[in-house]
Amino acid sequence: MTLKFQLQRMVRDNGELGSGAVHTPELLEENGMPSFDIVSEVVWHEVANSVDQANREIKNRYDFKGSDAQIEQEESELTIRADDEYKVGQALDILEIKLAKRGVDVGCLDRGQVEERGGGKAQQKIQIRHGIDTELARSLVKEIKAQKLKVQAAIQGQQIRVTGKKRDDLQAVISLMKDQDTPVPLQYTNFRD
Image (cartoon, rainbow, N blue to C red; front, side, top):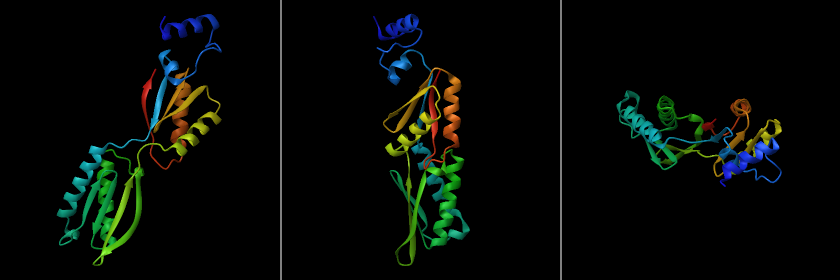
């Protein structure tokens, strides 16, 4: 007897999952319950393409002539180097425009302070935040549970899986999350009906 068949049989006999059933998101999903994932992801090749485009524009712009301004990427950290603080700001503006055009949410950028790097030149380090950390995930799950919707939210690594019987409840959770002010941009993926 497969697990799916056992769950269907319990639902048929009891009208709902019996008290002996194990309520994990994986089992509920097997039973055909709608679900979706709340994630915070960055498309890394789009970030790399945006950095390349921004560097090309910086080299061609008149106000950067004779300047050694550039943007470097090392994994999830960007470094903007320029002659002074004003040009660092200009390069950051160019980068943000390029990221937005390529569909990367600029809310994932954690901007550091502009600092001196010697010789009167300036630099700024920018961390790209991705993934939902445990503390934020707990607060989001707590907020979902406070709404008293008939859904279950489970933290799975750097994402949250939300399952429920009704699609309307899941859509209510999505609209609730869109209204939240989170430090990282959230996306909603793997919506299964």
